[in-house]
Every structure is written in C-alpha cells, then in structure tokens.
Amino acid sequence: MRVLMLCRATPYLPTHERARRPAAHLIAELAGRHALAVIAPPGCGDTPVQRAWVASRVTRFTQPAPGPWRHPLTGAAGAGLLAMRAAALRAIWEWRPDVVHLDGGVLAPLAATLPVPAVIADRAAAIAPRDRRLFAACVVSSEDDRRILAAHVPFDRIDVIPPGVDESRYELRRAGERARLIFAGHLDWPAHLDAARRLARRILPRVRRALPGAELVLVGAGAAGERRALAALPGVRVAGAVADLRPSLWSAAVTVIPAEAGPGVDAAVLESMALGTPVVAARRALAGLAHLLPGHHALVAETDAELVEAVLVILREPVVAATLAANARSVVARHYSWSAIARCYESLWARTADGGATAVAA
Image (tube, rainbow, N blue to C red; front, side, top):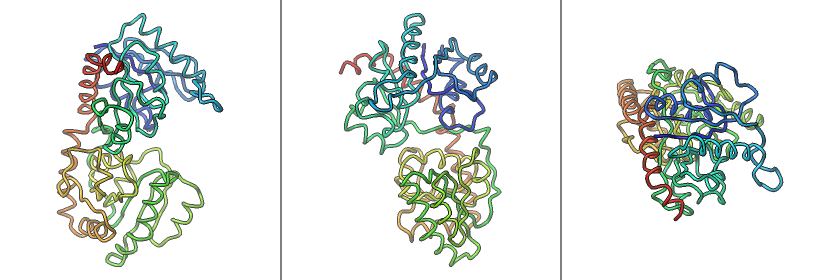
C-alpha cells in the first residue's frame, strides 16, 4: 500500500513532543511493510539529524514553505495550508498514493481538495465543525470524541484508536514513593484544573487523615496564580510542565484521574501502566481504552469516597499494587504498544483505500 502522510511538524524519534510521536511511530513500525511518503513543513528547531531520520525511512519526503494554517481574521486557509495542499497534489500526481493520512485537525480542510480518500487523526474537538464531513475516515482517542463526531459524521466512519506507548522507553520500574499520588494533565484546561482542585481540596485531605505523610504531585502547565493556590494547600506540590513525564510517574505510588478530567488523558493512563504505576480513575477517563478491565488493570472510582478508598487500598496493600502494575503492563504490551496501534492504522488505511471514495461521496 502507498500512504501519503501530511504532518503538522517533521516526525522523528526520539522526541518528547506529543504532536510528533504518533506519525513518527507509525513510520517506524510500517515503513518496512508499506511505501510511505511524508509532507511536513520545516520547524525552526528541526535539526539535520531529525530530518534525516524521516527521510531515510520513507520513499518521498517533502518540506513545503511554512506559514500560518489559517487567516487570523477570516479563518480562510493560510499560506501554510495552501503550501501543504500544493505539495500534496504534486505528490498525488507523481506518486499515486492509495490513501492520505492527515495528522491533525488543522489539516482537515485538505481532505475535500485531494482526489484520494483521506484519514484524519485527532481529537473531535480539534476538528472545526465545518470540516467534519470532509474525510473518508477519522481516528479519535475516546468514545466521548466518537459521540461528538457522530452528530456530524456517519458512525462507521469514526474509529477509536488510543495513543500508543513505546515499550522500550516506558520500561516497567516499581520504585515509587510509598504515599505519593500524582495527576498529570493540562492545568490551563478547565476540566483538568477542576480535576486537580478536587484532588487537592477534597481527596488528598481525606487520604492524609488515614496516612498523614501522603502527598499529591500535580504535573502540567497552567496559570501561575492557579498553580500557586494549589501549591499552598497542605501536602500538594505543583511540578508544572515537564518535557519528560516518566520520572514523575516513576516517583508516584498511584496515578489518580477523577471524572472531571474526562477523556484526553489516555496517554497519561497508558504511560503510568507501562511504567508500573497503578491507576485509579473514573470510567469516563478510561473510555477510549476498551481492553482495560476494572479491578484487574486499574481501579475504577467515581465519588470522593470511592476515590479515597481505592487510593488507600493501593497505598496500604503492596501486593494489590504490584498485581495491578503487572496486569496493566501486560495489557499495554498486547494492545497499546506502538506495534499494536500501527496494526490498527494499517487495517484502517486498507479499508479506507478500498471504500473511501464511496464514503466521501456519501
């Protein structure tokens, strides 16, 4: 199969940037089985080694001139999007791909202008409403996102594929602090900030009444005032944004994700499980991870009382914590490693290439 990949930034490995990882891992896993071509604008921080990484693995690598994706006032296609479209049309004419893979909602408008069925991968909220009927297939990371898109797109054109985990980079290591809780998110997102506040103001105090030495670490960018307010609470430490989440997750005894966080935390859940940090989460936070069994791979809790009870079970019962960690690592290896995720994309690309033209016409 011939797959033309349009990316927002040059994909390469290793990288700490979440925006580059999915495309880079798909290239690493599938370049040996399929012919891949990549179009990505150059970034000011890209190095020759990084550009060489992708160029050495694909059949064709093009870097059109960078520019804004959208006009700031009208919302019309900007210079960057027009340059990507011109490069894509040239590649389609010269290279004849079977399917186009659009890595990010900002590229969604291109789907309607290309004479090849397109798959787009992003969160539903990142795809503008006017662009939601343009593609042959869409990949989202949770069932919540799927329901959002289903209001505009036929249900059978939406696939739920979670983010993958690099097993070698996220190696199992059970070495966390005995009574440390962690929540990793984006504290400038209202839902994640609400989750952090609930943990700091309602959950941690009850845990500390049972285990006075318990502490909560909050990881993620956010407004300085909000972070200072949270850090002033007893037992709360705010780490801010980090380039590499692994040391924070390794240091914790349990990752806690309340319902407020909602979907969009799949990566933190999977990374915790891969590293051996047990997870306590609301069902909604696990909505995109169909292979997880409550009580076997993670503890599920909704109310404050349930969250406190589940956290205390993990903190007080080392055997339970170790069993959850081992079970979680096993399911990550089977279903959420990048090799497993790449097979999901491989199947979707094949289906889209076979029937995508009909879907777009519909």
